[in-house]
Length: 368
Ligand code: OSB
Ligand code: MG
Image (cartoon, rainbow, N blue to C red; front, side, top):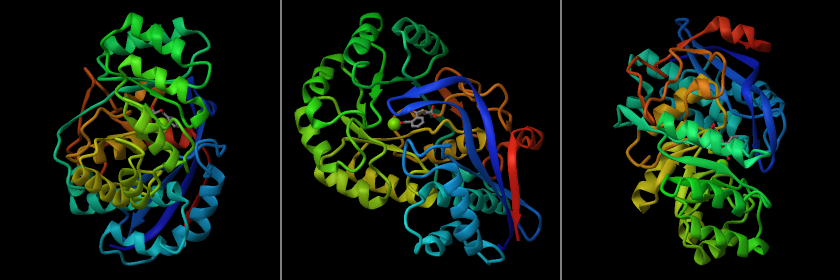
């Protein structure tokens, strides 16, 4: 397969509601789409899950554009590629910038799967035709508002509820949720808002029977997470800490986490995601697929990876309508009773809605 040319699209899509985490509020999603086109004119699509500002990690949408334009796209254009995993070697000399690498790799995976006429999920070794999903709810000024959303999402059938927490918006909020919903599968995501000085607060969360607490401490703090995990009954789940296979291996070895949140963009693409999946399977570490408020294209890739065997906890891949007035794929992602059906068509398995993409594009460029 030869990558004839690559197109980049900078998107600006407004979400139906603002989403607040401990690191900030986002409503306008400025992210990139990558379209890789082969010598026969067939297209594959990937999403770069960055935001306008480097709040989640050091990458941001304009840095990814630069990375893709200057280094990554030139490494693949006009090149003969045997398999999408060849990109690992072509990108190896460039450090990190995982979301940018992942986006181009995703487009090549989709293109390759389409050229072979197989669903991406199958190509990755997926074994499921349905996947289980939960939902991630942002911090609300007022807890009644959060309780209303929880009620709505429980009624819609989501398999678990994740709430964002931060210092001052934690114990009281969780206590109120548990008072109203003693039994729902519930977890909390701190997005690194705590340190070991907050041990008392974190230990107090043990009383709420949470499935896990996600990323309580700073991304680089594998050792402190291990110290914390030893003192908590609640399993620690790592998100921002895991950028590579080596991070996952060390976190497991140190006991920094009992559960891992997989984000394909964060670990540099589907090839790395699969390696980390296989490691977790071998080590008996449960895994689930996180989200980055993706459009339908990123969502489709998340669905494909979640079909692998060891994705044994519900992920964050909610319905398109939870985020968007109108998504850029057809059909849109629809979760029913906390489950969604894995598409059976080749590649990502959804059609691209070019009209919607164009309507939300703020700049684009083709690279020959
Ligand atoms: O920490 O998992 C996170 C959204 C943006 C950045 C980080 C995170 C999240 C979410 C939402 O939790 C997941 C989703 O619904 O896509
Ligand atoms: Mg998280």
